[in-house]
Amino acid sequence: MNVGLNEYLILSALLFAIGFLGVLVRKNTLVIYMCLELMLNAANLALVAFSAFNHNLDGQVFVFFIITVAAAEVSVGLALIVAVYRKRQVTHVEDLATLKL
Amino acid sequence: MDNLLFCFFAALTLGFALAMVFNKNTVNAVLCLLLSLLGVAGVFALLDALLLSVLLVFVYAGAVVALFLFIVMLLNLQDLPKKPYKKISLFAGMIAAALLGLGVWSFVTRGQFSAAPVAKVFHDGLKDYGAMLFTTYLLPVEVVGFLLLVAMLGVIVLSKKLVGREESK
Image 1 (cartoon, one colour):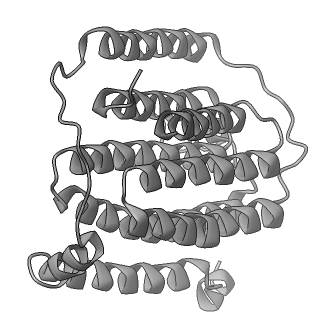
Image 2 (spheres, chains in turn cyan, brown; image 1 turned 30 degrees about the vertical axis):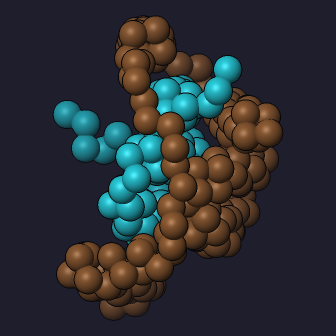
């Protein structure tokens, strides 16, 4: 078996599925956030694979922007989690139900 | 050789991703995320995206994972009481997981490109990459720089102790 575009895409889909599974089954806010990062990286993987197999660098430039935005997102998100923890002392998503009707 | 490396990095990525999802200890989960991201960086290197591979290790391993580890240790989440799932959310989660599995399965069995292109060598890849960043994508680069500035200011505002507001309550 020679590794082609399909294998890279399957790897990306599996990684995305694992990240999504983590978002579904875990209840710790920090772990859910880490799973979101995993899903972002699955998308990165698909973009880089398409870019490499199509001789086109645009996908890789896009991944550069995704990494930058992810770094900004992580910093703001973690600051929000810490702010919520300071106010309420909770990190479980089920305890954060004040907005629920 | 490429096949062997691909299998190694794919196993590293998927294995540690699963380990991260099902790890009870949050610190261990963060370290599993780190190893999984190293696997992704290895796959990037296999695809000749060497700059992105190095960048991923720097940004994720150097900044993001370190930040996660710092926050986990700061909040000290080691011994949280284990709560059972609610029945309705368990049901919804099982349906969602089944749909997800079905989606991956149908992708693996039917979503194949029959004639995918094979060769993948970039001559002067890095040079072209830099040129694109500073010509075609100059405006997005500026916007992303501005976004980083805004994020930095936002974090400062969020994590500052608002002294006046606390006292007024």
